[in-house]
Image (cartoon, rainbow, N blue to C red):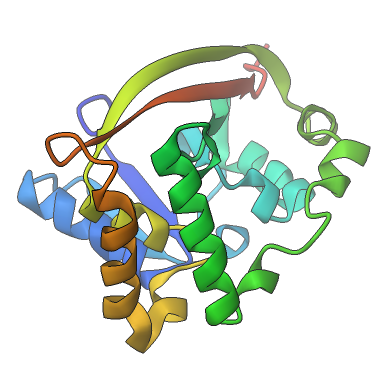
Length: 214
């Protein structure tokens, strides 16, 4: 989005993630990309600040009602909120995906991180769906769009992607990072073709709009 907006704010509660974005922005001399390490609920934004707010694979992890209300305030009239979703590489049917899922389960148990994704985490969304939460905040539906893309991973890229998750981030891996990487490489190397692991990623985004002024 860096070529489509005068300013882009990248917000994440994890310092490692904002540092990764900061490094990428510096590499392409994108001075208008600003990284902010803060909980979304605590973002110090003024009303009518943004034309578009994008939440990637994370709305369910936030205080949905509070974020919906604040996003409505932060958007300019006619601005949009996009909830973006994608499938996870460890959730597919291929042999390498099953091996990845098994490896992640093992390490979550080894590191005592199994409870970082609480059981029944999605029940509140089933009782009170996202679109109802957004509607109560004043948003109007602008449609849902889905598409699929073939993606080729390296094992190193997968390791980085896993560090972006809430269940095995860098601070959880800590001094076991090298051992985890070695185990991941050993488990997945037998499935690679030309050092690549291929999957079809399904994406979706749900778009809602703050009504324009009359």
